[in-house]
Image (cartoon, rainbow, N blue to C red):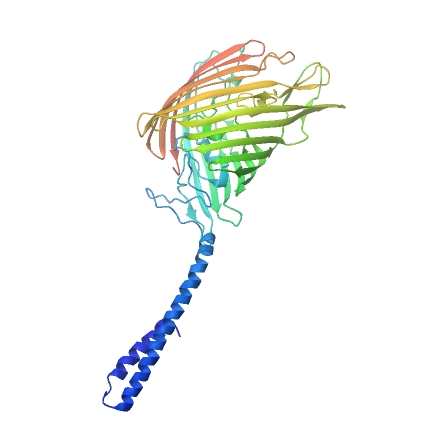
Length: 477
Protein backbone atom coordinates (compact mmCIF):
# COMPACT_ATOMS: atom_id res chain seq x y z
CA UNK A 1 0.00 0.00 0.00
CA UNK A 2 1.35 3.44 -0.91
CA UNK A 3 2.19 5.98 1.73
CA UNK A 4 -0.63 8.24 0.56
CA UNK A 5 -3.27 5.49 0.87
CA UNK A 6 -2.09 4.55 4.35
CA UNK A 7 -2.30 8.14 5.46
CA UNK A 8 -5.78 8.58 4.00
CA UNK A 9 -7.05 5.38 5.64
CA UNK A 10 -5.76 6.54 8.99
CA UNK A 11 -7.27 10.02 8.62
CA UNK A 12 -10.64 8.64 7.50
CA UNK A 13 -10.70 6.14 10.34
CA UNK A 14 -10.02 8.77 13.01
CA UNK A 15 -13.21 10.86 12.52
CA UNK A 16 -15.34 7.71 12.61
CA UNK A 17 -13.94 6.80 16.01
CA UNK A 18 -14.15 10.36 17.35
CA UNK A 19 -17.86 10.44 16.45
CA UNK A 20 -18.74 7.70 18.96
CA UNK A 21 -20.17 8.29 22.41
CA UNK A 22 -17.24 9.55 24.43
CA UNK A 23 -19.00 8.64 27.65
CA UNK A 24 -18.49 5.01 26.85
CA UNK A 25 -15.25 3.96 28.53
CA UNK A 26 -14.55 1.14 26.14
CA UNK A 27 -15.04 3.40 23.18
CA UNK A 28 -12.71 5.99 24.69
CA UNK A 29 -10.11 3.33 25.15
CA UNK A 30 -10.56 2.16 21.57
CA UNK A 31 -10.37 5.78 20.39
CA UNK A 32 -7.10 6.33 22.23
CA UNK A 33 -5.67 3.16 20.77
CA UNK A 34 -6.62 4.17 17.22
CA UNK A 35 -5.20 7.64 17.74
CA UNK A 36 -1.93 6.10 18.84
CA UNK A 37 -1.93 3.87 15.74
CA UNK A 38 -2.63 6.85 13.47
CA UNK A 39 0.21 8.83 15.07
CA UNK A 40 2.53 5.88 14.65
CA UNK A 41 1.42 5.53 11.04
CA UNK A 42 2.10 9.22 10.38
CA UNK A 43 5.59 8.91 11.84
CA UNK A 44 6.25 5.82 9.71
CA UNK A 45 5.14 7.63 6.55
CA UNK A 46 7.36 10.60 7.42
CA UNK A 47 10.36 8.31 7.87
CA UNK A 48 9.64 6.65 4.51
CA UNK A 49 9.44 10.05 2.82
CA UNK A 50 12.78 11.08 4.34
CA UNK A 51 14.42 7.87 3.12
CA UNK A 52 13.01 8.24 -0.40
CA UNK A 53 14.22 11.85 -0.62
CA UNK A 54 17.70 10.80 0.49
CA UNK A 55 17.81 8.05 -2.18
CA UNK A 56 16.61 10.48 -4.88
CA UNK A 57 19.22 13.05 -3.87
CA UNK A 58 21.97 10.46 -4.15
CA UNK A 59 20.77 9.40 -7.63
CA UNK A 60 20.24 12.90 -9.02
CA UNK A 61 23.84 13.68 -10.19
CA UNK A 62 24.15 10.39 -12.07
CA UNK A 63 20.81 10.94 -13.77
CA UNK A 64 21.89 14.42 -14.82
CA UNK A 65 25.12 13.05 -16.26
CA UNK A 66 23.19 10.58 -18.42
CA UNK A 67 20.48 12.96 -19.50
CA UNK A 68 20.49 14.66 -22.89
CA UNK A 69 21.04 18.41 -22.77
CA UNK A 70 18.01 20.58 -22.23
CA UNK A 71 17.17 22.51 -25.40
CA UNK A 72 17.84 26.23 -25.19
CA UNK A 73 14.87 28.61 -25.39
CA UNK A 74 13.32 28.86 -28.83
CA UNK A 75 14.28 31.85 -30.94
CA UNK A 76 12.05 32.99 -33.80
CA UNK A 77 10.40 29.59 -33.93
CA UNK A 78 13.66 27.68 -34.50
CA UNK A 79 14.82 25.18 -31.91
CA UNK A 80 18.31 25.36 -30.43
CA UNK A 81 20.50 22.89 -28.60
CA UNK A 82 23.35 23.38 -26.19
CA UNK A 83 26.58 21.73 -27.33
CA UNK A 84 26.75 18.49 -25.36
CA UNK A 85 29.67 18.59 -22.95
CA UNK A 86 30.96 21.92 -24.30
CA UNK A 87 30.75 25.45 -22.90
CA UNK A 88 29.24 28.16 -25.13
CA UNK A 89 31.67 29.51 -27.70
CA UNK A 90 33.75 32.40 -26.38
CA UNK A 91 34.76 33.71 -29.81
CA UNK A 92 33.12 36.96 -30.99
CA UNK A 93 30.02 36.41 -33.12
CA UNK A 94 30.49 36.95 -36.84
CA UNK A 95 28.65 36.67 -40.15
CA UNK A 96 29.98 34.94 -43.24
CA UNK A 97 28.51 34.32 -46.67
CA UNK A 98 30.13 30.92 -47.23
CA UNK A 99 30.41 30.19 -43.48
CA UNK A 100 33.62 28.10 -43.62
CA UNK A 101 33.76 27.89 -39.82
CA UNK A 102 30.60 25.76 -39.69
CA UNK A 103 32.50 22.67 -40.82
CA UNK A 104 35.60 23.18 -38.69
CA UNK A 105 36.56 20.73 -35.96
CA UNK A 106 36.51 22.33 -32.49
CA UNK A 107 37.61 21.45 -28.99
CA UNK A 108 34.81 19.55 -27.20
CA UNK A 109 32.64 20.05 -30.32
CA UNK A 110 31.93 23.64 -29.29
CA UNK A 111 29.64 25.79 -31.50
CA UNK A 112 31.18 28.00 -34.22
CA UNK A 113 31.17 31.81 -33.89
CA UNK A 114 28.72 32.03 -36.81
CA UNK A 115 26.18 29.85 -34.95
CA UNK A 116 26.78 30.10 -31.18
CA UNK A 117 23.28 28.78 -30.31
CA UNK A 118 23.32 25.76 -32.65
CA UNK A 119 19.90 26.59 -34.05
CA UNK A 120 17.65 24.16 -35.88
CA UNK A 121 18.33 20.84 -34.10
CA UNK A 122 15.51 18.44 -33.31
CA UNK A 123 15.32 15.15 -31.40
CA UNK A 124 15.38 11.71 -32.98
CA UNK A 125 12.54 9.92 -31.12
CA UNK A 126 13.66 7.25 -28.70
CA UNK A 127 17.31 8.34 -28.73
CA UNK A 128 19.59 11.00 -27.27
CA UNK A 129 20.61 12.09 -30.78
CA UNK A 130 19.75 15.51 -32.17
CA UNK A 131 20.02 16.21 -35.91
CA UNK A 132 19.90 19.22 -38.18
CA UNK A 133 19.47 19.56 -41.93
CA UNK A 134 20.79 22.81 -43.34
CA UNK A 135 22.45 24.57 -46.22
CA UNK A 136 21.68 27.37 -48.62
CA UNK A 137 20.90 28.25 -52.23
CA UNK A 138 23.20 30.87 -53.79
CA UNK A 139 23.11 32.52 -57.20
CA UNK A 140 26.17 34.40 -58.49
CA UNK A 141 26.22 36.80 -61.45
CA UNK A 142 29.78 37.50 -62.68
CA UNK A 143 31.22 39.98 -65.17
CA UNK A 144 34.96 39.92 -66.07
CA UNK A 145 36.81 42.51 -68.15
CA UNK A 146 39.47 39.91 -69.10
CA UNK A 147 39.59 36.16 -69.44
CA UNK A 148 39.78 34.71 -65.92
CA UNK A 149 40.36 31.04 -66.69
CA UNK A 150 37.57 30.14 -64.26
CA UNK A 151 34.01 31.40 -64.65
CA UNK A 152 32.80 30.47 -61.14
CA UNK A 153 35.70 31.33 -58.79
CA UNK A 154 38.24 34.16 -58.83
CA UNK A 155 41.62 32.37 -58.92
CA UNK A 156 44.51 34.51 -60.25
CA UNK A 157 46.71 31.41 -60.66
CA UNK A 158 44.37 30.33 -63.50
CA UNK A 159 44.48 33.59 -65.46
CA UNK A 160 45.46 32.77 -69.08
CA UNK A 161 48.74 34.70 -69.21
CA UNK A 162 50.08 34.91 -72.74
CA UNK A 163 46.87 33.55 -74.31
CA UNK A 164 45.49 35.28 -77.41
CA UNK A 165 41.96 35.54 -76.00
CA UNK A 166 42.84 36.83 -72.53
CA UNK A 167 41.52 40.34 -73.29
CA UNK A 168 37.96 39.22 -74.03
CA UNK A 169 35.30 40.24 -71.50
CA UNK A 170 32.91 37.61 -70.20
CA UNK A 171 29.63 37.26 -68.27
CA UNK A 172 28.40 34.20 -66.38
CA UNK A 173 25.71 33.11 -63.90
CA UNK A 174 25.84 29.98 -61.76
CA UNK A 175 24.51 28.39 -58.57
CA UNK A 176 27.33 25.92 -57.96
CA UNK A 177 28.07 27.18 -54.46
CA UNK A 178 24.62 25.99 -53.31
CA UNK A 179 25.24 23.81 -50.29
CA UNK A 180 23.62 20.98 -48.32
CA UNK A 181 24.60 20.02 -44.74
CA UNK A 182 23.60 17.29 -42.33
CA UNK A 183 24.74 17.27 -38.70
CA UNK A 184 24.09 14.98 -35.74
CA UNK A 185 25.11 15.37 -32.09
CA UNK A 186 24.66 13.21 -29.02
CA UNK A 187 26.24 12.66 -25.58
CA UNK A 188 28.38 9.57 -24.90
CA UNK A 189 30.44 8.22 -22.02
CA UNK A 190 33.54 9.45 -23.88
CA UNK A 191 32.38 12.98 -24.60
CA UNK A 192 30.14 14.72 -27.09
CA UNK A 193 29.78 12.95 -30.47
CA UNK A 194 29.38 14.97 -33.66
CA UNK A 195 28.85 13.72 -37.21
CA UNK A 196 29.08 16.29 -39.99
CA UNK A 197 28.38 15.97 -43.71
CA UNK A 198 28.61 18.85 -46.20
CA UNK A 199 28.25 18.96 -49.98
CA UNK A 200 28.07 21.64 -52.65
CA UNK A 201 27.72 21.56 -56.45
CA UNK A 202 31.10 22.88 -57.59
CA UNK A 203 32.29 21.13 -60.72
CA UNK A 204 30.68 19.94 -63.92
CA UNK A 205 29.69 22.19 -66.81
CA UNK A 206 27.35 25.14 -67.02
CA UNK A 207 24.20 22.98 -67.28
CA UNK A 208 25.14 19.91 -65.25
CA UNK A 209 26.43 20.42 -61.72
CA UNK A 210 28.27 17.78 -59.69
CA UNK A 211 27.33 16.88 -56.11
CA UNK A 212 30.71 17.60 -54.55
CA UNK A 213 31.85 16.36 -51.11
CA UNK A 214 33.32 18.97 -48.76
CA UNK A 215 33.16 17.35 -45.31
CA UNK A 216 32.42 13.86 -43.99
CA UNK A 217 33.75 13.20 -40.51
CA UNK A 218 32.97 12.18 -36.97
CA UNK A 219 34.38 13.56 -33.73
CA UNK A 220 33.95 12.07 -30.29
CA UNK A 221 35.30 14.16 -27.46
CA UNK A 222 38.45 15.66 -29.00
CA UNK A 223 39.26 12.84 -31.44
CA UNK A 224 38.43 13.58 -35.09
CA UNK A 225 38.52 11.14 -38.00
CA UNK A 226 37.31 11.60 -41.56
CA UNK A 227 37.47 14.04 -44.46
CA UNK A 228 37.56 17.81 -43.95
CA UNK A 229 39.79 20.80 -43.26
CA UNK A 230 43.47 20.27 -42.68
CA UNK A 231 44.55 21.13 -39.13
CA UNK A 232 47.20 23.39 -40.68
CA UNK A 233 44.54 25.88 -41.85
CA UNK A 234 42.40 28.22 -39.75
CA UNK A 235 38.79 28.38 -40.95
CA UNK A 236 37.86 31.11 -38.43
CA UNK A 237 40.24 33.62 -40.01
CA UNK A 238 39.02 33.25 -43.62
CA UNK A 239 37.59 36.52 -45.00
CA UNK A 240 33.90 37.12 -45.71
CA UNK A 241 33.72 37.34 -49.52
CA UNK A 242 31.02 36.65 -52.10
CA UNK A 243 33.72 34.99 -54.20
CA UNK A 244 34.04 31.41 -53.07
CA UNK A 245 37.79 31.01 -53.66
CA UNK A 246 39.15 33.81 -51.49
CA UNK A 247 42.74 35.13 -51.51
CA UNK A 248 45.35 32.89 -53.10
CA UNK A 249 47.72 33.27 -50.16
CA UNK A 250 45.37 31.57 -47.70
CA UNK A 251 45.89 28.07 -46.37
CA UNK A 252 42.96 26.04 -47.69
CA UNK A 253 42.93 22.26 -48.07
CA UNK A 254 40.40 19.52 -47.41
CA UNK A 255 41.71 15.97 -47.03
CA UNK A 256 41.38 12.76 -44.96
CA UNK A 257 43.02 12.81 -41.54
CA UNK A 258 42.87 12.01 -37.87
CA UNK A 259 43.26 14.81 -35.31
CA UNK A 260 43.60 14.75 -31.53
CA UNK A 261 43.07 17.96 -29.57
CA UNK A 262 44.39 18.49 -26.05
CA UNK A 263 42.68 21.41 -24.25
CA UNK A 264 44.67 23.04 -21.47
CA UNK A 265 43.82 26.15 -19.57
CA UNK A 266 40.75 28.17 -20.47
CA UNK A 267 40.47 28.60 -24.24
CA UNK A 268 43.89 27.06 -24.99
CA UNK A 269 44.44 23.87 -26.96
CA UNK A 270 47.08 21.82 -28.76
CA UNK A 271 46.15 19.71 -31.79
CA UNK A 272 48.24 16.92 -33.30
CA UNK A 273 47.18 15.49 -36.66
CA UNK A 274 48.22 12.89 -39.19
CA UNK A 275 46.86 13.68 -42.66
CA UNK A 276 46.88 12.19 -46.15
CA UNK A 277 50.20 12.88 -47.90
CA UNK A 278 50.52 13.76 -51.56
CA UNK A 279 53.63 15.00 -53.35
CA UNK A 280 52.97 17.36 -56.27
CA UNK A 281 56.12 17.54 -58.39
CA UNK A 282 57.60 19.30 -61.42
CA UNK A 283 60.41 17.70 -63.42
CA UNK A 284 63.41 18.90 -65.39
CA UNK A 285 66.53 17.42 -66.94
CA UNK A 286 64.80 14.87 -69.17
CA UNK A 287 63.31 12.73 -66.39
CA UNK A 288 60.29 10.91 -67.77
CA UNK A 289 57.40 9.09 -66.10
CA UNK A 290 58.17 10.61 -62.70
CA UNK A 291 55.31 10.58 -60.24
CA UNK A 292 54.97 11.73 -56.67
CA UNK A 293 55.52 9.19 -53.92
CA UNK A 294 54.68 9.17 -50.22
CA UNK A 295 56.01 7.21 -47.26
CA UNK A 296 54.44 8.71 -44.12
CA UNK A 297 51.46 10.96 -43.30
CA UNK A 298 51.81 14.72 -43.19
CA UNK A 299 52.23 15.75 -39.55
CA UNK A 300 50.59 18.91 -38.21
CA UNK A 301 50.93 20.51 -34.78
CA UNK A 302 48.71 23.52 -34.04
CA UNK A 303 48.58 25.66 -30.91
CA UNK A 304 45.46 27.81 -30.45
CA UNK A 305 44.34 30.46 -27.98
CA UNK A 306 40.70 31.64 -27.86
CA UNK A 307 39.36 34.63 -25.97
CA UNK A 308 36.29 36.86 -26.18
CA UNK A 309 38.37 39.31 -28.28
CA UNK A 310 39.12 36.62 -30.88
CA UNK A 311 41.76 33.94 -31.40
CA UNK A 312 45.35 33.28 -32.46
CA UNK A 313 46.64 30.06 -34.01
CA UNK A 314 50.22 28.94 -34.66
CA UNK A 315 50.80 25.86 -36.80
CA UNK A 316 53.75 23.72 -37.91
CA UNK A 317 53.76 21.21 -40.78
CA UNK A 318 56.22 18.40 -41.53
CA UNK A 319 56.11 16.46 -44.80
CA UNK A 320 58.06 13.66 -46.45
CA UNK A 321 58.16 14.39 -50.18
CA UNK A 322 59.26 11.87 -52.77
CA UNK A 323 59.04 10.58 -56.34
CA UNK A 324 59.61 7.41 -58.32
CA UNK A 325 60.57 7.03 -62.00
CA UNK A 326 61.42 3.48 -63.02
CA UNK A 327 64.40 2.43 -60.88
CA UNK A 328 64.97 6.00 -59.67
CA UNK A 329 63.63 7.15 -56.32
CA UNK A 330 64.38 10.07 -54.06
CA UNK A 331 62.88 11.71 -50.97
CA UNK A 332 63.28 14.97 -49.10
CA UNK A 333 61.70 16.84 -46.21
CA UNK A 334 59.13 19.61 -46.52
CA UNK A 335 58.05 21.92 -43.75
CA UNK A 336 55.93 24.98 -43.07
CA UNK A 337 55.02 27.42 -40.30
CA UNK A 338 51.85 29.51 -40.11
CA UNK A 339 50.36 32.27 -37.99
CA UNK A 340 46.71 33.32 -38.22
CA UNK A 341 43.90 34.84 -36.21
CA UNK A 342 40.86 37.10 -35.95
CA UNK A 343 40.51 40.03 -33.60
CA UNK A 344 37.50 42.09 -32.51
CA UNK A 345 38.17 45.82 -32.94
CA UNK A 346 35.42 48.48 -32.74
CA UNK A 347 31.84 47.38 -32.14
CA UNK A 348 31.28 44.21 -34.18
CA UNK A 349 34.18 44.92 -36.57
CA UNK A 350 36.76 42.18 -37.11
CA UNK A 351 40.34 42.10 -38.33
CA UNK A 352 41.52 38.80 -39.86
CA UNK A 353 45.00 37.88 -41.04
CA UNK A 354 47.15 34.89 -41.97
CA UNK A 355 50.74 34.25 -43.05
CA UNK A 356 52.48 31.00 -44.01
CA UNK A 357 56.02 30.18 -45.16
CA UNK A 358 57.87 26.98 -45.91
CA UNK A 359 59.32 24.48 -48.37
CA UNK A 360 57.13 21.91 -50.06
CA UNK A 361 53.85 23.49 -48.90
CA UNK A 362 52.40 24.67 -52.25
CA UNK A 363 49.68 22.04 -52.00
CA UNK A 364 48.34 23.77 -48.86
CA UNK A 365 47.90 27.22 -50.51
CA UNK A 366 44.80 28.16 -52.51
CA UNK A 367 46.54 29.46 -55.63
CA UNK A 368 49.28 26.83 -55.83
CA UNK A 369 47.43 23.67 -54.81
CA UNK A 370 47.47 21.20 -57.68
CA UNK A 371 50.18 23.09 -59.57
CA UNK A 372 53.01 20.59 -59.07
CA UNK A 373 55.09 23.05 -57.06
CA UNK A 374 55.76 21.11 -53.86
CA UNK A 375 59.08 19.88 -55.21
CA UNK A 376 61.34 19.88 -58.28
CA UNK A 377 62.87 16.66 -59.62
CA UNK A 378 66.20 17.08 -61.44
CA UNK A 379 68.58 17.82 -62.86
CA UNK A 380 69.91 14.42 -61.99
CA UNK A 381 67.73 12.26 -59.79
CA UNK A 382 67.48 14.46 -56.72
CA UNK A 383 64.24 15.98 -55.47
CA UNK A 384 64.23 19.44 -53.89
CA UNK A 385 61.42 21.06 -51.91
CA UNK A 386 60.39 24.44 -53.35
CA UNK A 387 59.94 27.60 -51.32
CA UNK A 388 56.45 29.06 -51.11
CA UNK A 389 54.67 31.61 -48.98
CA UNK A 390 51.36 33.41 -48.76
CA UNK A 391 49.58 35.99 -46.65
CA UNK A 392 46.44 38.10 -46.52
CA UNK A 393 44.68 40.66 -44.35
CA UNK A 394 40.95 41.38 -44.16
CA UNK A 395 38.73 43.81 -42.31
CA UNK A 396 34.98 43.52 -41.72
CA UNK A 397 33.06 46.70 -40.90
CA UNK A 398 29.40 46.73 -39.81
CA UNK A 399 27.60 49.85 -41.03
CA UNK A 400 24.46 48.73 -39.18
CA UNK A 401 22.84 45.56 -37.92
CA UNK A 402 22.02 44.53 -41.51
CA UNK A 403 24.81 46.09 -43.60
CA UNK A 404 28.50 45.17 -43.62
CA UNK A 405 31.55 45.58 -45.87
CA UNK A 406 34.84 43.74 -46.26
CA UNK A 407 38.26 44.82 -47.53
CA UNK A 408 40.65 41.98 -48.45
CA UNK A 409 44.16 41.86 -49.88
CA UNK A 410 46.49 38.90 -50.21
CA UNK A 411 49.49 37.50 -52.05
CA UNK A 412 50.94 34.08 -52.90
CA UNK A 413 54.49 33.48 -54.11
CA UNK A 414 56.76 30.73 -55.41
CA UNK A 415 60.21 32.29 -56.04
CA UNK A 416 61.77 31.82 -59.45
CA UNK A 417 63.68 28.57 -59.70
CA UNK A 418 65.79 27.30 -62.58
CA UNK A 419 64.25 24.17 -64.01
CA UNK A 420 60.62 25.15 -63.56
CA UNK A 421 58.45 25.60 -66.66
CA UNK A 422 58.17 29.19 -67.87
CA UNK A 423 54.38 28.95 -67.54
CA UNK A 424 54.55 27.78 -63.92
CA UNK A 425 53.06 29.95 -61.20
CA UNK A 426 55.27 32.69 -59.79
CA UNK A 427 53.25 35.40 -58.01
CA UNK A 428 49.60 36.37 -57.56
CA UNK A 429 47.77 39.31 -55.99
CA UNK A 430 44.14 39.26 -54.84
CA UNK A 431 42.04 42.25 -53.75
CA UNK A 432 38.34 42.45 -52.93
CA UNK A 433 35.84 44.87 -51.46
CA UNK A 434 32.13 44.32 -51.04
CA UNK A 435 28.84 45.57 -49.63
CA UNK A 436 26.58 42.92 -48.10
CA UNK A 437 22.98 43.31 -46.96
CA UNK A 438 21.32 40.77 -44.65
CA UNK A 439 17.78 42.01 -43.98
CA UNK A 440 16.95 38.66 -42.34
CA UNK A 441 19.15 35.88 -40.96
CA UNK A 442 18.24 33.57 -43.86
CA UNK A 443 18.54 36.12 -46.68
CA UNK A 444 21.72 37.78 -47.95
CA UNK A 445 22.40 39.96 -50.99
CA UNK A 446 25.62 41.67 -51.99
CA UNK A 447 27.89 43.11 -54.63
CA UNK A 448 31.68 42.70 -54.78
CA UNK A 449 34.53 44.16 -56.81
CA UNK A 450 37.62 41.97 -57.26
CA UNK A 451 40.98 42.55 -58.90
CA UNK A 452 43.82 40.08 -59.36
CA UNK A 453 47.22 39.77 -61.03
CA UNK A 454 49.35 36.82 -62.06
CA UNK A 455 53.04 36.62 -62.90
CA UNK A 456 54.45 33.35 -64.19
CA UNK A 457 57.97 31.99 -63.75
CA UNK A 458 58.88 33.15 -67.25
CA UNK A 459 57.63 36.68 -66.66
CA UNK A 460 54.29 36.53 -68.52
CA UNK A 461 51.59 38.54 -66.74
CA UNK A 462 47.81 38.66 -66.68
CA UNK A 463 45.18 40.53 -64.72
CA UNK A 464 41.42 40.66 -64.36
CA UNK A 465 38.79 42.82 -62.71
CA UNK A 466 35.51 41.15 -61.77
CA UNK A 467 32.16 42.49 -60.62
CA UNK A 468 30.09 39.90 -58.80
CA UNK A 469 26.57 40.05 -57.41
CA UNK A 470 25.05 37.35 -55.20
CA UNK A 471 21.70 36.36 -53.70
CA UNK A 472 21.64 33.69 -51.01
CA UNK A 473 18.85 31.97 -49.09
CA UNK A 474 19.86 29.91 -46.07
CA UNK A 475 17.79 27.01 -44.78
CA UNK A 476 18.84 27.37 -41.13
CA UNK A 477 20.44 30.54 -39.80
